Length: 221
Image (tube, one colour):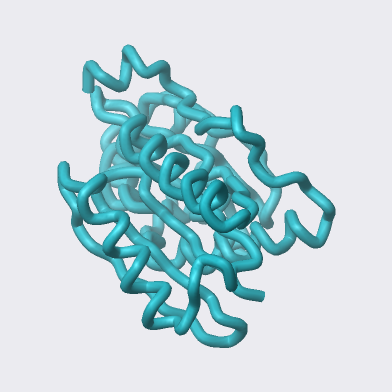
């Protein structure tokens, strides 16, 4: 299949295209200039993959959680592509996308995004099964739902920071760390195509991100 995915949940912007067996990925630290960099990044990735928007079977992105501004930007960009070229848009939960490459891990997989204010967007997966849903939580709250007898893998853009905070609040945890930021786009391809195969509907015009934290709280970060 031919697809385009956007991973923009914080200041790092990653766009990837799939043209059957060809993959093209471009990741940039966009900072506060995401809205300026995203259109050009999408154009470069599509060109390098020898794709035009009308060639795409689908697009996909993170549903959330993540930065309110970054998530909204991704939705606007792909919905605009849908309006221009009729390409369906699929949204994949952010934390699921980061946990997916590690579904064979024998213990707990904890994908993490820094939610600021000493909190994290996090979830817990075991063998690919969601055992604790995505939440806006403190390290203490996350530590309480982990078993000190299991191997714990923190993944995602802020995996290292969460592992440090967990070590601070609870001793004896068997913690490993993987920054899965560049693995998540491939998960978006896989999970979006799973949704298509299962007959899931693409995003409707009115569908938006799943922020978890309110926009008012996000603005206070």
